[in-house]
Length: 93
Image 1 (tube, one colour):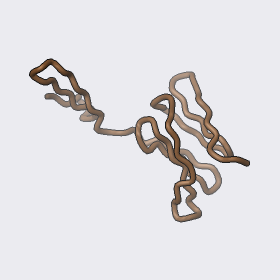
Image 2 (cartoon, rainbow, N blue to C red; image 1 turned 30 degrees about the horizontal axis):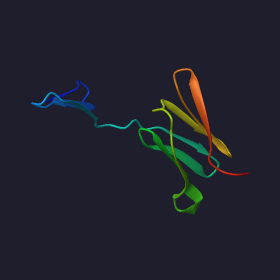
Image 3 (cartoon, helix red, strand yellow; image 1 turned 90 degrees about the vertical axis):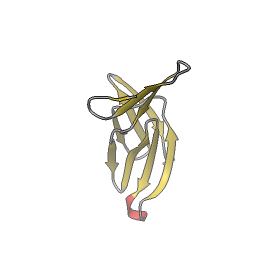
Image 4 (tube, one colour; image 1 turned 135 degrees about the vertical axis):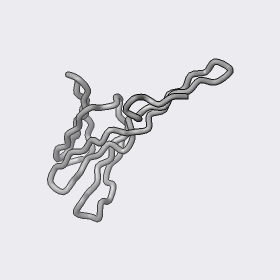
């Protein structure tokens, strides 16, 4: 068993030959539009909360990638990695 140098990943092997890696730190990604905040709630799950209504979750979705950046607009949100972007509709106009 060993930790990565920055402490974000722990890896271990078992006597039967299995190798496991566990991510211990989820990157903090967020964006805001009007009274809505969009945040990464796990590595591939995103939540949109309404800050004007006591941080009520108004949308939640599973992403196709583990994004490095996110942004939110009035009806859609975008997530991306490197030079690729995925768009998701989170609200009907």
